[in-house]
Amino acid sequence: MQGAPPIPEKTITVNRRARHEFSIDDSMEAGIVLSGTEIKSIRAGKVNLTDAFARIDKGEAWLVGAHIAPWESTGNRENHEPKRDRKLLLHRGQIDQLLGKTKAKGLTLVPLKLYITARGKAKVELGLGKGKQQHDRRREIQARDAKRDIERELADAGRR
Image (cartoon, rainbow, N blue to C red; front, side, top):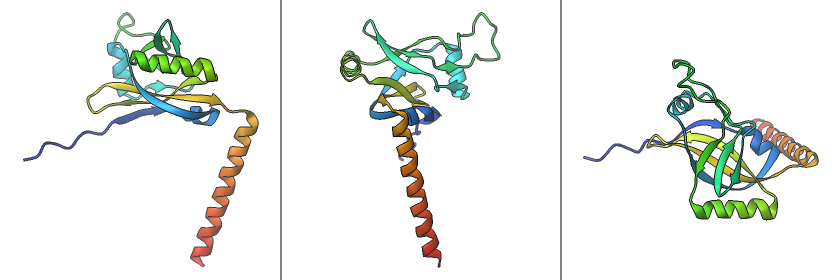
């Protein structure tokens, strides 16, 4: 008898704005230090990464600006602050590598998605990105529209 198949990870939220405003070069996984009510809110999907970013301060990585809604069924004393800074769990070598890249190349650490692993741990995928200029965004939109038009024409030609 074989064991049960592995449970896949469950994506809670994706930061679509990050891919729009940044060109992402590299990404890595990091754990998050959470309180009890925060993990409950994350599992319920009450998370927003839109204005969030990560920074390295005094040799530690921090997630700043991520909004995790307070859990409704607890009192105010036991609840968490929705926009507090949360410590990220990374190895020393990873932190040093990220610090070097952000200082030297002027890259930004952007949270791309938040998910729950098969073991029930909350993880965040961080991306190293460089901010796009307005003309870069316009060029990307034009290329996407052109590709969509070409695919539409090919589909119409195939139906005839």
